[in-house]
Length: 96
Image (cartoon, rainbow, N blue to C red; front, side):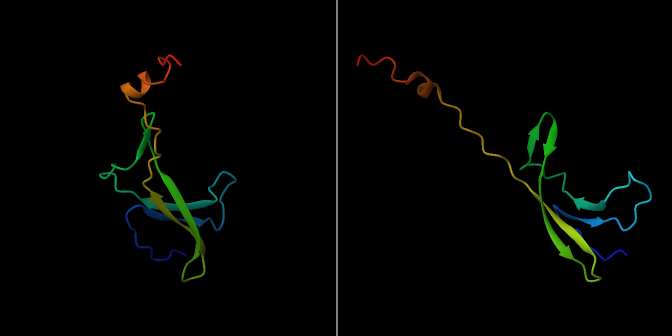
């Protein structure tokens, strides 16, 4: 039971496996389309590209339940590092 699925950039789906052939078979299968030429808004940690994934439970036209996925090209905001002047200006040199 394969519904037609139009791939869109940074989106995909996971379908529940209808019958597992063995215990180690996956519970879900699917695909996700990621434009690897556009890696501008992606967090890189220890050489790995980290993507945040969002999912929505949906039902296909044939009634199959699946998870619709999207990649959120989210980069965590970093705490700004103090400038050299802010490091020196801690108030410790004031006489009072």
